[in-house]
Image: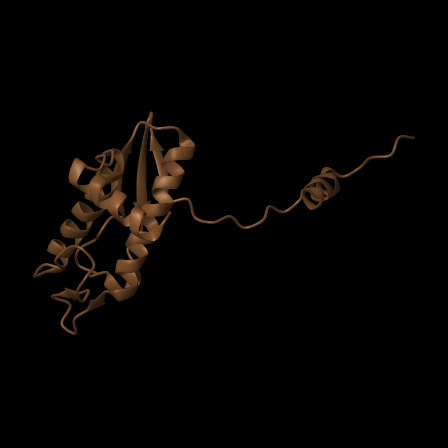
Length: 151
């Protein structure tokens, strides 16, 4: 007589034998068709319940996955700096970020969201612009400093 093995036992053994994957860092990267987007969720301390705010999303364009991932991590660092310094007012009508972050907070949470999205989009676009080579006066100044320092 042939032995019968329960399929439940076999399934449980197969599941138990799979290695558990290590937790991964957030990628902040979303791909739709051939276009990559940076995406980050708003922290709970800055959400206004009645607004129903979707995640902040910035178009990175068509790039290699590696370049898009690097760009997304860099933008996430900028966004996290803002999130750490931002505070919601008591009445929920205003978000304050202090000074020196590169964009005005605006007079309402909606303006803050728009200003931050524009700030991150500008930062992303700035990475695509090549740095202008130094002009003749800058080169003369650099040469003078090298002569003085002996380098």
